[in-house]
Length: 127
Image 1: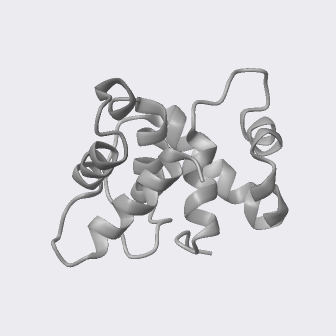
Image 2: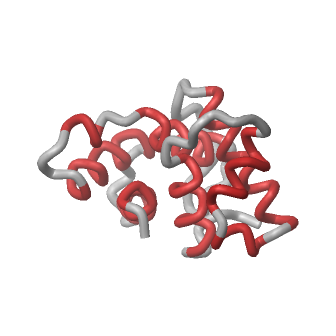
Image 3: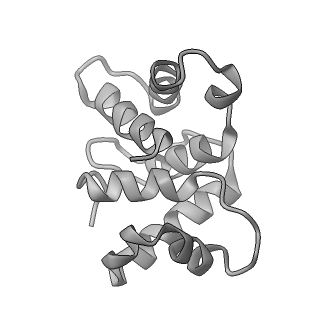
């Protein structure tokens, strides 16, 4: 599993463990644990925006919808990826093809699909 996917699952765990931690704080705590020696990797905004976007829309099990992040583009990518996976769950094994269906153009993915696929595969995305 990709490290950002690992961070996303860990962030969900932090949100749901009864400590009432907000998704943004849970993300920061998770990436600090997953990338203890790299603030650059901890600060990467695209996977964070994807995670917070899914949380904002109420798509993550155990996390109520709310205003958790400011990234509209990464939120859009993540939400659209969930929509695509709902009709073709086999794309979890083809992140590049999923990204192409989501982005619809030749821009590079920046770990947004790792977040979505990891949460989806772990059963943490509401159906």
